[in-house]
Image 1 (cartoon, rainbow, N blue to C red):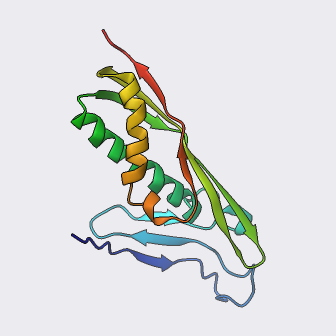
Image 2 (cartoon, rainbow, N blue to C red):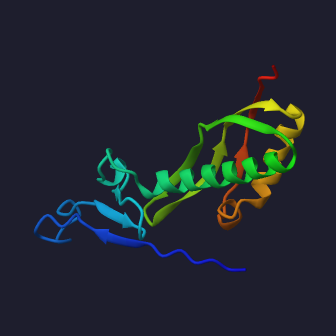
Length: 154
């Protein structure tokens, strides 16, 4: 089964002179997906972007973290583990050079709170979630996970 995802990107950074010089134009743009809120985005501030807006690097790390989370929640449900809290303090590392750059790694650091089920099994499920995540399977750098499981058994 295949799925497709239509995304429109509109550059909104023309300051009147277009791309007449590297500092002459803004990096602001909109990410538009039909029927959903518009994401106001820019480049990373290191590349003359607006720090108040999401940048492609933020969004890549977020895509990896949320894909992993959604798979983990699914697998936890199947395993009879009741998750009552989940947060991830993910971090991506990127190197930039004269001809572009690339991510070298992303580390996911999910903190999961459960109130039913086996905590050791919950920790093991992160490996399976990592293997099943579509986004992680599509990148050419390692995506590691360092989960913390907190049990709130009553």
